[in-house]
Image (tube, rainbow, N blue to C red; front, side, top):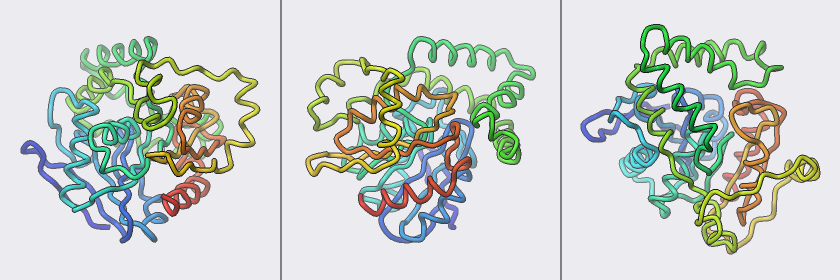
Length: 304
C-alpha cells in the first residue's frame, strides 16, 4: 500500500493506492478515514487498483474551508483521480462517502462506472435529520468537552446493539479517530452535510423514473409487508439492464440506526440496475459482516 498526497487549493489531501487493474475509489464516512477500508482493500486489491481517500479534514487530509460541502468533497475526489490518471472508476462510499460518490457522478458523470452505497442513500436530509444535524453543530460550537462527548456518544450507535461488545475494538478506534479530528474539521463537514441536496436524479438517470425523481424527493417509503416480501429477493443479484447508464450496489443493514432502511430499499427499486445485499448488521457492514461484504462487492466489481 502506497501513501500519497495531492494538493487542492494549497492544502494536502491524503490517499493510498493498492493493487493493479480496474480502478476502485473508496470513500469513508463521517469522522472516519481511509484506514477503515484496510480489510476490504486486502480483498479487492487482488484484482483492482484501489484508491482510498481521506476526505477533507479527515485522517491525514487538511481542512480546505469553513464548510466542506458535498460538491467540494466530490471535486477533491476528481482531483485525486486526475492525479492518478484514472479515467473512470467504480466508487464505493460508506454513509457520507456515499453522498460524495453520488455528487461525483452528478458533477463528473464520465468518471463513474458504477457506485456501491454502504449504508447510504440519495435523498437530502428530511426535517428531522436536518434538525438533528443543526443541534449537533450548535452543541459543537458551544466548545468545552462538547466534541469529546459528541464523538463518544456517536460511535457506538454505528453498530447494531448485538454487535457492540464484539466490536469494542473498532468502536475504540473510531472514537480515537474522531477525537483526533479538529473541531474546525468536524464543524466544516457537519455544515456541509446540512446543506446537502438530493441526488435522486443520479439514481434514475436514463430511466423511466428519471423525470419524476428530478422533480423532488417524493420517494415512497415501502410498508413493512412490502419489505418482508423483498427480503428473500434482496440477497440475490437483480438482472442488470443493458440500457442502464449506471449500475448500483446497495448494502443495507437491518439494524442500521442511521438510515431509514425502507427508504433506502425504495430508492434501490428506482434504479434500472441495482444489486442489494441485506445484512443483519448496523451501519458498519464492512466490519460487522466483512466476509459477505467483501465477496458481494468483489463480484459486483467483476461485472461492472
